[in-house]
Amino acid sequence: MKPNKVLYLAVTCSAIILVLNLSASGQAKVTKENFGKTSEGQNVDIYTLTNRRGAEVKITNYGGIITSLKVPDRKGKRDDIVLGFDNLDAYLKGSPYFGAIIGRYANRIAKGRFTLNGHQYTLAVNNGENHLHGGIKGFDKVVWTARPLKVPNGAALRLTYLSKDAEEGYPGNLSVRVIYTLTNANELKIEYWATTDKDTVINLTSHSYFNLAGQGIGDILNHQLLINARRFTATDAGSIPTGELKSVKGTPFDFTSAFRIGERINDDDQQLKFAKGYDHNFVLNGRMGTLRQAAVVYEPTSGRSMEIWTTEPGIQFYTGNFLDGTLTGKDGKVYQQRYGFCLETQHFPDSPNHPSFPTAVLRRGQQYHTITIHRFKTSSR
Image (cartoon, rainbow, N blue to C red):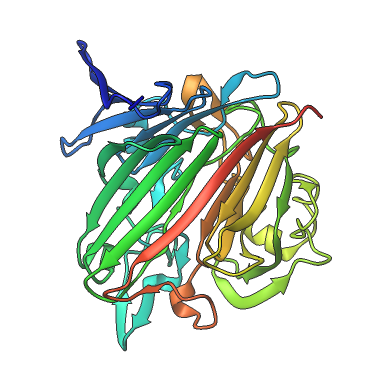
């Protein structure tokens, strides 16, 4: 039986809800509601993707933000496992990039400068003397064009955005497409594409803060983490890579076997002191461009685990070091230090200034394409 594309169009006093049947069983769906307006008066929507098994992700076209992600624990109870806010105004007021698409360049570029084809480009500086996460108004603060997609294995949403030449200092008109798919196997797949009319640099990622016990429940120090990386990019005090790809062996950065996140986070290690915890890029094993397992996280009280698979060369592990109790998130939960962790698949920080790092240059006529998959499972142990 062919799925019905549109099941109904309902009008309420506060929102228009469009429900799409995206699977033959009629259980996977996308709903759309109004989420408010930006300070410039742009309408913002929020989309809820639900798969056949009842897992759910909410995504707004403001910043492509994942505002909520509900997956089951070992008893089948679905909890929201990402940090965020209940309303658009809170995101507009200020957010530490909760759940957002990051671009043009995720992570830092030293002193907001890089040279490409013999020309030096100067970017917006918004992190001390450095450029961070795309600048003052990165992809996390723009309104994307959204469209639900019909897919055979779950529910999907496509977001597109045209970043104009010289936006935040970057060269080229960059056309970006991101597709979120919540599969019926409880996977959240994020796929990125981009093309440019002028040589540029690009590094896109998703910046969700996870707590597999449930958002706002407590800290993430008892989560057990494995990262498939034998090296990491050592940094200076400003979190800019020195260029050294340092071995994790014999250091608190060795997650080649699973360790509790909190087990060595306060060790007497200069790299940890620089970042006040973990905030480092790990050099993933295997060949860039091939989909391979980057990390596995397990939370023992809920039994939830998350595997991350990616085609990217690196992953940034961040332990919410600068959450400090000043932000009140969803359901009135106050976010204290280390209440969430990030595992951001990416090219290395400051790659445009390190020729030895995997290139982040996108040439005119080429296509940028990367894939990251979050696989959620439960364990009875």
